[in-house]
Length: 157
Ligand SMILES: Nc1ncnc2c1ncn2[C@@H]1O[C@H](COP(=O)(O)OP(=O)(O)OP(=O)(O)O)[C@@H](O)[C@H]1O
Ligand SMILES: [Mg+2]
Image (cartoon, rainbow, N blue to C red; front, side, top):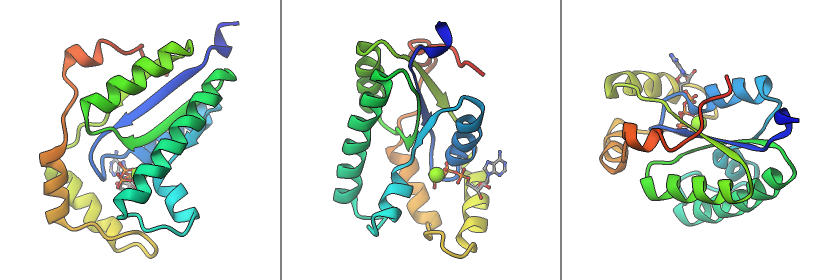
């Protein structure tokens, strides 16, 4: 049945864009498995700003995602996917195991991101992200073009 077709949902956007918020909602609505590098790093007692640890966790989660897709699951990844090459790689590898692939780009003005992050920084237990670091993230970010978005499957919901 079509509803058992595996599907990968990639949430793309800068810090504060709302990836985790959307991913949690979709997790319920699509009966999906959500894979959050931040939550795995925290759960393993690792530093969220340790780039090497993040790289290793993201690679391991991607292997896990491919196994889940092979079992017919809907998998949501909220890594941010700032680089076009990462998004190409995920799309092509997921399609190779027969999965549909969605790219959801959460485009939010920088002033709004700053406002949200300043609020979140005040919450106990949340990692603190400075406005300066947010700006440097913005410089590295490669926004998807319409041509790229057209390469993905239409969202289910
Ligand atoms: N549509 C929205 N309007 C206003 N506030 C929002 C919206 N979506 C999320 N937020 C708030 O903005 C903050 C950041 O949201 P969220 O944690 O979902 O972003 P994120 O993209 O996962 O960020 P990060 O990359 O840092 O994990 C949270 O406090 C959240 O409640
Ligand atoms: Mg998040």
